Amino acid sequence: MVLATVKAWPVTARVFRLRRPHLSRRVASNLKVVLCVLVALLLESLLHVHRHAIPRPPKDLDAPFSTQCQDPVVAAAATPRENATLVMLARNNELQKALQAVQNIEHQFNQWFHYPILFLNDEEWDAEFKRVLSSAVSGEATFEVIERKDWGFPSWMDVDAARIQMKAQEAKNIYNGGKESYHHMCRFFSGTFYEAEALKKYKWYWRVEPGVEYTCAITYDPFVEMARRGKTYGYVVSLWEVDETVPSLFRTVDGFRRAKGIGATPNWRAMIQPSWAPWPIRRVLGWFGANHRDYNGDIWNLCHYWSNFEIADLDFFRSDVYRDLFGYLDHSGGFYSERWGDASVHALAVHLLLGPEQLHHFADIGYSHEPFWQCPGNAPGGQLLNSTVLGDASGVSPESEHAIGCRCRCPDERRRNNRGICLNTLQAPAAFHRPTFAQKWRGEYPYTINIPSPVPKP
Ligand SMILES: Nc1nc2c(ncn2[C@@H]2O[C@H](COP(=O)(O)OP(=O)(O)OP(=O)(O)O)[C@@H](O)[C@H]2O)c(=O)[nH]1
Ligand SMILES: [Mg+2]
Image 1 (spheres, rainbow, N blue to C red):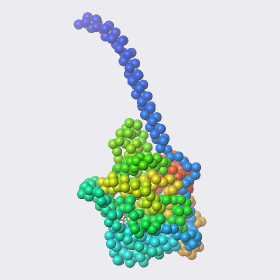
Image 2: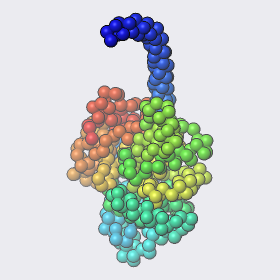
Image 3: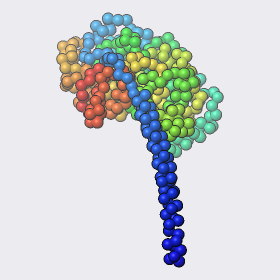
Image 4: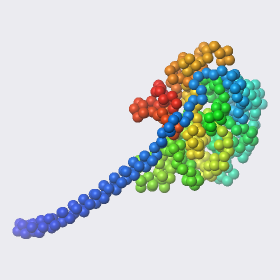
């Protein structure tokens, strides 16, 4: 036995001597290939992320329309009114909240500018609602009932299947997912509100919701400024969408973008969080339509504008391309199979179809819709304290550094009570001044791109 082992040993050694260098060369060359592939994938990922960088414009493309109080009577007399209206969708049982919002906007703005207000409802208006609200407005008040074709399921939809899908959303506790009327409302604001007969004669609209509050005086005409500065869409608050309400919305909008051959402009890219996943994984994620991913496998950052405040050019919504986009989204069924909100639809649409210079952040407007608010604080030396038009300034917030508001009553010294990440992300294509890495790290985001100084943390 021992002899056999001794005899066998030189043979094994020979085999080893022969095989080892051969094996390790193969492993080494395989390793090299793997390493090369990994480096190539890493470089591709880096390049991919780099391609999504948002170029810095040579100057800020958006600025507050006003940075202190103006005499609103002088401002109103300086220019004719735009062809514009305030619009409030409401239910009869929201009388008190509607009244509060209308009285508030009259007090802060419309008492000097007298824009009409159009009240929309999916049901007949109560006489009491009409009587009370008519007496609260300084412009013309119109009460309209939305046509059946503009409120409800699209004609081609399998309503029973849609109802089952909404029940499933309710079971998953998706916010308003089980509320049929809420789905109708989101579909209406996403795509059919501009079809309302009573809106057809207007170019501009300002959306007002029952229960909202304007916390500063607005002493100039925002419609006039929008028109004068070539703006199309104005907003105040920007934040993250509730992700389970919109799993396939981004992919569907991206599908439309591709079908129409619309490029990935900086404004569109501001919606995207580029994926670091290596190319093959990215492709798979894109092909199989993972939640919030586009066809490239990149992710929507879920940022959008809160559409309960909106001042916009209705011609944008009436354009062929927007109508096509809405039709495309509608036919995909997501207003019912998921709970797509009009805020996200509008935000994705304006970032897809408009340039950064056409969007406007109303940084000078104080606005509150529970639970979030924005308040610009009172501009130092800019409160027109002796103005008889603006009246007594007692009870307003103290003036503060870098503040740009007029006679604001802010809940505290902050400029907003939501994080500024989405605001800054979506503003990036228009922003020459941007937060530094250190500022972002500390959670400090400039309140408005045209006032680059740091502001208190939200
Ligand atoms: N006429 C009518 N108006 C509705 C209906 N559902 C919602 N609205 C209106 O649509 C707007 C948005 O509805 P809200 O319930 O405030 O929805 P939201 O702002 O997304 O959510 P909240 O955080 O609950 O305020 C408001 O102006 C409501 O009055 C409805 O079934 N009929
Ligand atoms: Mg609301």
